[in-house]
Image 1 (cartoon, rainbow, N blue to C red):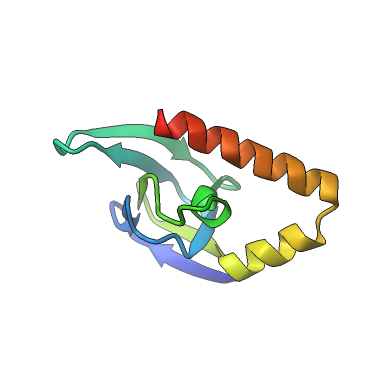
Image 2: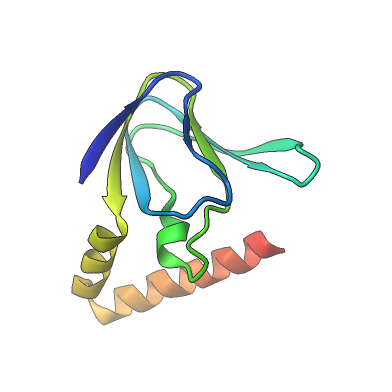
Length: 113
């Protein structure tokens, strides 16, 4: 796992990009936002130390980011790669794996409307 550093207002990733990793906020604050076809932006979450984001792109079939992320202040993000995530899931008990995949499916359904 890699730790990346971001300045205030620096984009971490953009909606529609291929999701190669999930992030864990180690320091700072991260804003998650979506942008519609007209360019209007809606903030959907503000994340603090210890919170994870970008995980849906690793767990869903789409692999594309459903939202954008930016650092609201200096932030350190621990990146969890797709390979790391898959290793953790294959080592998890079958029941936990089934629960995680069911939650991902439900969240994706809600986000797609």
